[in-house]
Length: 194
Ligand SMILES: O=C(O)c1cccc(C(=O)CC[C@H]2O[C@@H](n3cnc4c(=O)[nH]cnc43)[C@H](O)[C@@H]2O)c1
Image (cartoon, rainbow, N blue to C red; front, side, top):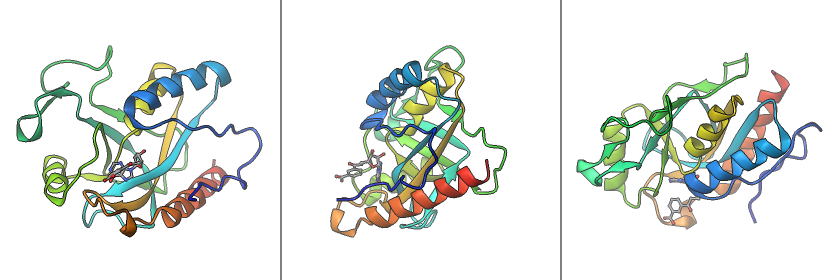
């Protein structure tokens, strides 16, 4: 079974699961922040890469996360919360800046797109890639975690290992172990440069 190897990470860090999808991740993060009062948080896991924008088996650290899927409509007629003039909460819109580490050398340009339902075909992936020309990868939790962190004023870093191409539903092609290994290594490098 694939797992993230966090054995090399210093004491003082608490490792917890955030759950699946934006809602579980936001609620769980808020619960964990209330319990542990962390100085900072790192979200680590896997994500899909938009074609040609990231390599399967590599890991990336992101500067910003954008929510896709909360708003009105679907497909080409979808309008996001910000598009229709709504904030998600107070001054939090569809996009949240990440970071908090002084060293930004391993941060990738381009955004992480955090979706409610993963793209299920190449055409859905292409449509999302067209709507977000600077989106590097797609995940399902980062925006929810970022929302909770923003509300609690806790800096968040997001590290995602790329396990698959966005839209690819054939799990036999996914490289989860390699992606998690790359993500572990990037987190350890990040902790060394704090
Ligand atoms: O069964 C499928 O076809 C399928 C397609 C995409 C994602 C899933 C998941 O169950 C995602 C689990 C988990 O991993 C992250 N993740 C990994 N690859 C992707 C992706 O291509 N698009 C969105 N999320 C992805 C995600 O954060 C989930 O937590 C199943």
